[in-house]
Each structure stands twice: as C-alpha cells, then as structure tokens.
Image (cartoon, rainbow, N blue to C red; front, side):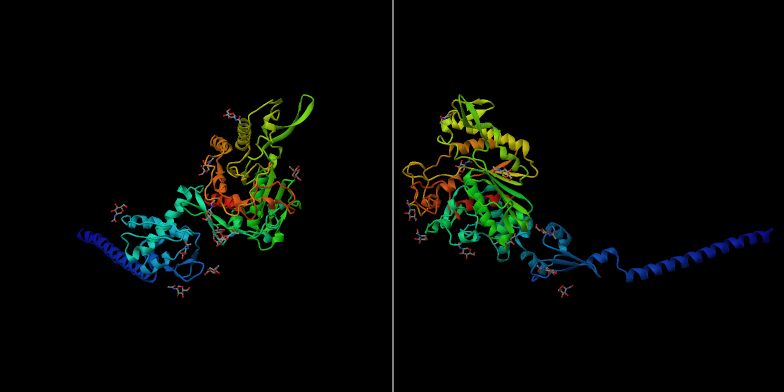
Length: 499
Ligand SMILES: *[C@@H]1O[C@H](CO)[C@@H](O)[C@H](O)[C@H]1NC(C)=O
Ligand SMILES: *[C@@H]1O[C@H](CO)[C@@H](O)[C@H](O)[C@H]1NC(C)=O
Ligand SMILES: *[C@@H]1O[C@H](CO)[C@@H](O)[C@H](O)[C@H]1NC(C)=O
Ligand SMILES: *[C@@H]1O[C@H](CO)[C@@H](O)[C@H](O)[C@H]1NC(C)=O
Ligand SMILES: *[C@@H]1O[C@H](CO)[C@@H](O)[C@H](O)[C@H]1NC(C)=O
Ligand SMILES: *[C@@H]1O[C@H](CO)[C@@H](O)[C@H](O)[C@H]1NC(C)=O
Ligand SMILES: *[C@@H]1O[C@H](CO)[C@@H](O)[C@H](O)[C@H]1NC(C)=O
Ligand SMILES: *[C@@H]1O[C@H](CO)[C@@H](O)[C@H](O)[C@H]1NC(C)=O
Ligand SMILES: *[C@@H]1O[C@H](CO)[C@@H](O)[C@H](O)[C@H]1NC(C)=O
Ligand SMILES: *[C@@H]1O[C@H](CO)[C@@H](O)[C@H](O)[C@H]1NC(C)=O
Ligand SMILES: *[C@@H]1O[C@H](CO)[C@@H](O)[C@H](O)[C@H]1NC(C)=O
C-alpha cells in the first residue's frame, strides 16, 4: 500500500522537475536570442536618431537632403512645405543648421515669421521705405544676433502691407531711367496711332516715369512671371480703343520675355489696324492667347426704324453680339467710357433702345447705368466664377487744353507730367461703374487708373498719332507706347500675382 503510494508520488515529482528544467532552458534561449537581436539591429527609436540631416548651404538650388540610413535618400526641393520640414527637424536642429535656415529664400522667410513673431514680441522697430523698397532701417532694443530676424520681419510686414493695406491709387510718378520696359523697335505690335516715336516724337522722357504708390512699392512687371501666370489660358481685353491701347502694351511687354518672336503670332494672320477689332495673339511657348475684341459700349449697337428712317441705335438692354467670344476667357479686362459722350450718342435723342422702344430722349448717365446693368447680369449669368477673373478698368482721362478734340484742343506742349491734378472729383462714370460692381454676384476687380493717369498730360500722342502731321486735330485721349498703359498693366500684373 505504501509502495504503491510512493510509486505514484515519484512520477509526479519527476514531471514537475522536468517541467522546471525545460521552461528554464526555453526562457534562457529566448532571452539570448532577444539579446543578440537587439545588439545587431537597433530599435525603432534608435533608427530615428540615425536620421541624418545633410544640409549644404552652398548648394545653388537650395535643396535639403535627408539621408535615411543606410541607403534611402529623400530629396526635398523648396516647394515642399516648410512647416513640414520644421516639425520633422524640430528640436534636432542644431546651431549650424540654423545658419542654413537663415539663408533660405523669401518664401521660406514668411513661414519662419511665425517663429520670429513669438520670440521677439517685445522689440520696437521702425521701417523706412526707400523708393526701391530695399531701404529698411531697424531701431530699438535689438541685439546683434537678432538683427537678421528683425529685418526679415520688416520685409514680411511690408509684403502683407502691399497685399492688404496699400492703396495703389495714391502716389506719385518717379523719373526712372530703367524704364520703359520695352523699346518701340523691339515691338512690332504698336499700331500707328500709338507709335509716337515712329511718328516723329523726339523726347523720350514720357516713357521713363514709374508709378510710386505712397505706402508701398508696385512690383516691376515681370514678363516671364506674367507668361507663367497665363500659361494655357486666355487673357482677353474687351472695350474701346483705349483698351486696344492697353492690350498692345501688354503684347509688347510680354514679347520682351519671348526668345523667338516668330513663336508669337495672330491666330488668323491679321494685322493690327485701327478699324478692325478682333485679334487673338498666340504665345506658342506658353500655350496662351492674348486677345482683344472691340466693343465701344459693351452693349449691342443696332439699327431701328424711327419714323421713316432707319437710324443707328444702342440696345442698352442687350449685351454686345460679340460676347460669345469673350466667354471662356480666363482673365477678362473690360472698359467703356469715351463713347458715352453727348456727341457720340447723338445727345441721347432717338438713340437708346430697349426692346422695340427707341427713347425719344434719354439722359446719357441713365443709359450708361442701364447698359452697365445689362453687362453685369451677363457676367453674373455667363461667367464661370471658378474659371474666370474679371476686371473693369476705370475711365482714362483726356487732356485737351484750349478746346475739345474736335475744336482745336491741344496737349503738344507737355513734356513733363503735371505736378498736381486739377480733377479731384471722380468722373460720374467711375461712380456708376463702382456702384454696379458692388451689386454683382461675381467679384470684379476695379483697375482704378483714373487719378494716376490724370498727371500724365505728357503721355498722349498729340500730333504724333500719325505719320503725317497734316491734320490740326490732336490726340490727347489715347496714349503713346511705350507709355502710361504699361503702368496699367503693372497694376493688372500685381492683382493677378497677389491672388
Ligand atoms: C553631406 O553631403 C556632402 C556633399 O554631398 C558629403 O560630402 C558629406 O559626406 C555628407 N555628410 C554626411 C554626414 O552625410
Ligand atoms: C539641384 O540639385 C540637384 C541635386 O543636388 C542637382 O541634380 C540639380 O542639377 C540641381 N539643379 C540646379 C538647377 O542647380
Ligand atoms: C515647384 O513650383 C513650381 C511653380 O510653383 C512648379 O512649376 C514646379 O512643378 C514645382 N516643383 C515641384 C517639384 O513640385
Ligand atoms: C516702444 O515704442 C512705444 C511707442 O512707440 C513706446 O511707448 C515704448 O516706450 C517703446 N519701448 C521701448 C522699450 O523702447
Ligand atoms: C536701393 O537699394 C540699394 C540696396 O539696398 C541701396 O544701396 C540704394 O541706395 C537704394 N537706392 C535708392 C534710390 O533708394
Ligand atoms: C479711384 O481712385 C481715386 C484716388 O484714390 C479715388 O478718389 C476714387 O474714388 C477711386 N474711384 C473708384 C471708382 O474707386
Ligand atoms: C528729361 O528728363 C531729364 C531728367 O529729369 C532732364 O534732365 C531733361 O531735361 C528732360 N528732357 C526733356 C526734353 O524734358
Ligand atoms: C521674373 O520671374 C521669373 C519667373 O518667376 C524669375 O525666375 C525671375 O527671377 C524674375 N525676374 C526678376 C527680375 O525678378
Ligand atoms: C471676329 O472674327 C470671327 C472669326 O473670323 C468672325 O466670325 C467675327 O464676325 C469677327 N468679329 C468682328 C467683330 O469682327
Ligand atoms: C441725368 O439724370 C440724373 C438723375 O436722373 C441727373 O442727376 C443728371 O443731372 C442728368 N444728367 C444730365 C446730363 O442731364
Ligand atoms: C513741376 O515740377 C517740375 C520739376 O520739379 C518743374 O520743372 C516744373 O516747372 C513744374 N511744373 C509746374 C507746372 O509747376
């Protein structure tokens, strides 16, 4: 009985013993393997510390290379979001790498502004803007090492100012030898009416004035950048001959950045003349077109029977029939003003038409308001907000002295801009334009060039609007090219660029 007991007891013990031995061996071997593994292969945490930032400051294209050990190379160009790099680098950024970040380009400086803002909030500084926008002075409690950062903050502030606060309409003209932006000889698109130099005008000072806004700088027109902005797009000017003036200026300015002028041509081979108004210039290298469509009133010029006669009328309730060609444009610049004169609208007598009604008499201002409303509803209905940007250029001033255009008015004597302008009241048409735009669903940018152009009595063709100066009639309405419309296009460029 006892034997039986011990017998039965012994195997249980043995089992326990073997189990202990085996489990110990298993644990020991597992531990050894784990130990070996962890010494040959680093843990995930270790791998991250081996991430190697190789920043070479003298690399011309400013690329940052992140070397992931052992072989993966990740190359980030400037385009890569800087904030991402910063969170990645975070506190691993060493002092030597800081010097790299200070040498980065403008775009990146704006990002870094966030860092600057919080770190030096207690420092006073003043900024003084020179004419060329680079003269910046810093003062206040500025330590030597902080200086670079302060300067950056000022630059950034200035950029914001240009975008948000600066009133480009207020300023003055500065004589600048680096203008004009193109020469008469380099541009075959200037038609006779604007080709003052070609028609014998000798003084060139009128081409050398740069518009200087009071509180900021207007960026110099960069034709390459402009072409990049309109790559694959349609830039379309619609309006009267003054818009043709601006359109030709745009063609000339853009051409200055094209290496092979043969790669710029009119789509249907048309030559620019005063009479026709239907042009589309193709810039092959950028797959874009720069177009002009004449439309004196933006609404439809028609004819109607009044009594026994068929008379020319203006359908102030119908958009110009050429409007189908404006549609689909990516950037549209409209204008209308000069044709709404007493003379050209037959004093409003049996001229303005709505439906079948030809008004025996209608106030030109009232008619202008109605026509603009017609234009506005066309834009609101037909223009794709997502695709098209719409501009309206305000009226350009004329400078007839001692008479009107048809009664001996002149501007020949002027070789210098006016020092002050007499017209301080905005023309009624501009006010109507502004009121109309405000009511629209489509955001329309008003290119307000009226008061800056008021100064430029020297910019008109006067007697140099023709090759032969036989006529006594002077042109003090249009503008010589190169000349004042170049500045209007710099304003347009500014708006497109800062979008
Ligand atoms: C950084 O890049 C330079 C040039 O590409 C190379 O000579 C250098 O060895 C690199 N440094 C490291 C730590 O990888
Ligand atoms: C930019 O850097 C990369 C790599 O260092 C190089 O291959 C490329 O040619 C450089 N580009 C320019 C424009 O310098
Ligand atoms: C960088 O940006 C330019 C213009 O914004 C663009 O043309 C280019 O494709 C971008 N490059 C990369 C690598 O994203
Ligand atoms: C900073 O400027 C403000 C106002 O210009 C002035 O009141 C203040 O005393 C200045 N602070 C220092 C530390 O200069
Ligand atoms: C334009 O900026 C440069 C560089 O900062 C400066 O040396 C020069 O005096 C400035 N010119 C004018 C007219 O402000
Ligand atoms: C155009 O700018 C001038 C000058 O700042 C201003 O007096 C006028 O009211 C502006 N006109 C419109 C329609 O905005
Ligand atoms: C052109 O401008 C320069 C510089 O202001 C001046 O010296 C010169 O007399 C001007 N020429 C004419 C013809 O007005
Ligand atoms: C003009 O723009 C192009 C393209 O954006 C740029 O490469 C060039 O540096 C700019 N030129 C000037 C003078 O700013
Ligand atoms: C513009 O050209 C097109 C195509 O040649 C033609 O159909 C249209 O009538 C022209 N419009 C004007 C206003 O000349
Ligand atoms: C046109 O009508 C408006 C108001 O209806 C009036 O203020 C304005 O003086 C009129 N203009 C002319 C030229 O009669
Ligand atoms: C305008 O200023 C210029 C230069 O400051 C001067 O030569 C010219 O006589 C002035 N013109 C008038 C009309 O005051």
